[in-house]
Amino acid sequence: MTPLDQSPALEPLRLTSLAHGGGCGCKIAPAVLQDILKDMPAAAAFPNLLVGTETSDDAAVWRLNETQALVATTDFFMPVVDDPFDFGRIAATNALSDVYAMGATPILALAIVGMPIGKLPVETIGRILAGGASVCATAGVPVAGGHSIDSVEPIYGLVALGLVHPERVMTNRGARVGDVLILTKPLGVGIFSAAFKQERLDPAGYEAMVATTTQLNAVGPKVAETAGVHAMTDVTGFGLLGHALEMARGSGLTVEISVSAAPLLAGVEAMAQAGVRTGASGRNWASYGAAVDGAEALPDWRRDLLCDPQTSGGLLIAAEPAAAGAVLALVRAQGFAQAAVVGRVAAGPPRVAVVD
Image (tube, rainbow, N blue to C red; front, side, top):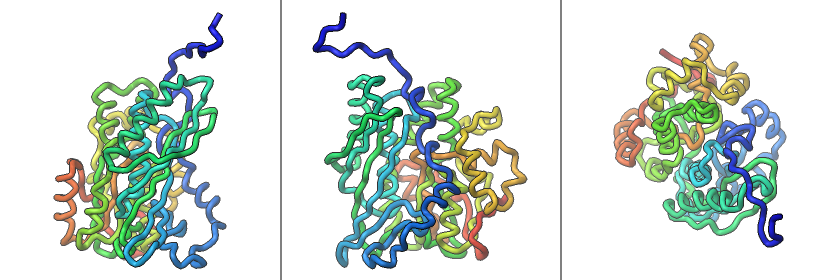
């Protein structure tokens, strides 16, 4: 008989077995989300709301005064890995990315916690929170509170707040004709996470996946201050094509993406060719494929890579050609070794065109 002052021991469980999806692959499909948000009130009634929901940007921005604007965002998801500390690190890195993508510096975080209390040991939950707190400590911000619930599936993330000068806010709507597009992290996280859940990812692949998803996009504010940079967003659950389309629509221009130029995690191309994919890549394509030219001619596995949901993905930066070298040098010096030019911005309707 279990003593009254002790909880019964819980059988070890894979965190990912408790969730129907994982990481940014959990996001609601773009078309469904657009339908949900279509009746949101316009920001025009609030003159200090510099960025709202109109162009699907990474965070809201509220002007506090002439020199400060508050950037506010929230991001949370279900486990993409089984190690609780790594799960916490990945989720926190992903949440802070939205602040960095707006050119802001994070100042404060609040934890969002939903856990199946009867299934997960409290020690495991504590490790998830510790992982998130470790990332916030690296970013120089406190986890100053939060909210928790008993939920069917494990959920963790952050509310993240940051500060930026109102005139230096980066959005996804400032791209100009002739700009080149730079992506700072390789693609393939969604495919690797699917392979991990299927127990088909080797230790080197797992290490690469954790390394890229826990790499803070802290270079964002420095990129925003670089002359010639016009727009920025982070590539997450809607994949490279989906977030490029948001930039195209926000800027009212055509975004061209070069298939061969997109950096990839080592080994992910072979894995995609072998049929490993996420359900989210199919939902993404079904949502926005009609607004993408050229991708229908690609092999399915190649299109899956371009639509692959990127948990804690890289920054997509639009900069004038003369600034591209400086931006690439900056981000590579900050540890983004695979950063590359992946496309350009052209005159034309707000669509994405896949080239070569």
